[in-house]
Amino acid sequence: MSKRVFATLGLLIVASLVLSACGGAGSGALKVGLLAPLSGQVPTFGISTREGVEMAVKEWNAKGGING
Image (cartoon, rainbow, N blue to C red; front, side, top):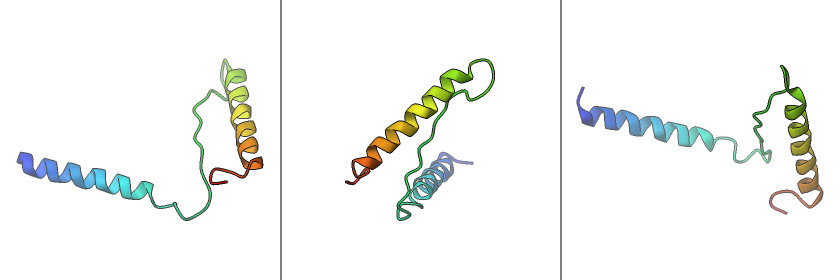
């Protein structure tokens, strides 16, 4: 395959990823991801991190949310 075909395929893949990320914009919900150990040898760090995120979300929502 030529470089042009690879470039076109790469562009299509990037465009599809960008468009798929925009799919839930009208739902009104904001999803927050968290990468923390919730089990294993050090779950206390992950649990306290999760609780901190939940507390921050509650504080933001009490102030009117992201757009408020």
